[in-house]
Image 1 (tube, helix red, strand yellow):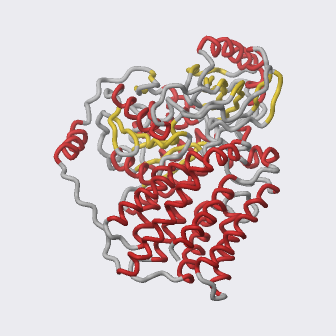
Image 2: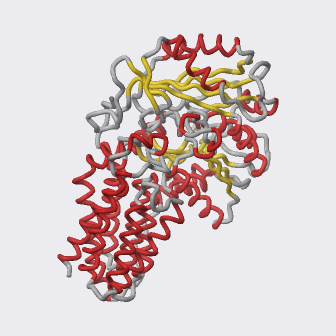
Image 3: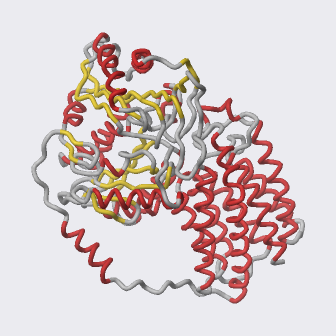
Length: 583
């Protein structure tokens, strides 16, 4: 288990602070993550990677020449926010555009996509690419739904090496696509991982058994088998991957492959070497030529006892890029000439930090009526933070049934930050709309992940509808909730029946709109809609998930409500209490 920490909520920030202090030769800190400490040639494409904390050396440890130009670092097992990604990409950009790369998880897809839009609005040409190499998470016919695990490394490296050769953005993207299409991974585990501050692992494996096809966020495997010997584990990994070859590879014999045997956190290097000796022999028996294999911890999951095998099937071009030198804190290959430190950018950043006088925070002008409504908004956000805090452990347990168990932690971080930001804005005399939009940004930034993106969208939609000029009536609030419902479906792509928060948000919005149309007061209309939300959340127990990390474990989730749906229902009821108190 993770034993050394201070405040669990500060773990990711403190880990990043210590990492940058230890590796100043390679990286320098920026808001949201790290970028190279060495200079990037003008006009070179910047490859910016990222994801949640808890996977070191992914993602910060892979920043340096020959690999990433920057890494956005989220909270534990949660994607970085769009604002963090935008900040890192802006710092890394050298005039040639930006390629954002990440594992294929809903939260990362949402936040990196939003960051790409913001960069484009800034005039920075940007493309995105999600690595989807885990064959256990979806079949070949649905390969676009697969998770990104240890295959991140060879795909990131191919794109970064192409960028360093001076290729333009579209060609760097095509290299990433080629590498991604020819990369496959499969993993097994013998125990789950324990998050900082938690007193139990996210999942357990029975004695003398192993989980097969696990994820890297503490998701349980898709099945269990008897605990193997090292040679049996090697055979399972190799035979599973050789069953699915890229479309243009008919037979493994005579093919070349980059091979990664990855330790997930607590399997020791000597154990990995015992397994790899058999992996190498089996691949050799199949006629595969192994090119520059890697054995070690490359994409981890805290203290998970597990391993994964990755094969990237190489052509001449991909082999050249795989063999290219790299120099990062956690991954080094070949030899590079001495690099010049990026003194210009570093000095500008340091000077700004040393001499800048923080500007007094300002808020847009607001009417007295809107500032009065902001009192109610603040009380509602306080109620949200309190109910989430009271149920965080329960939400984590629900989420761990078929997911990664971090929903309660993420919701606590987000709701607490949102209430704090709202209180700051309220203290400056902000109207209801600004209080909500400041809360939206804080929730998205601190929570990260899918829930951070979606709750940021919900609060921002409400803030836009309420504005800072008028006292919002029941119809205006209902309109904002309806807008939020549409925005969440548009952003996340989920619909009713997918076993997500949408299964509660849509009926809640519809019920609130109907009740206000009947002329009910906001408190009474919200009460009726919250009752609908509670019933809808309970109803998700009978659904099979069709999206997100729970999808590969659909059967396991039967009988358990969706964590996001349940938390939304709890929140709607808590807000009703605040509305009654401020009626």
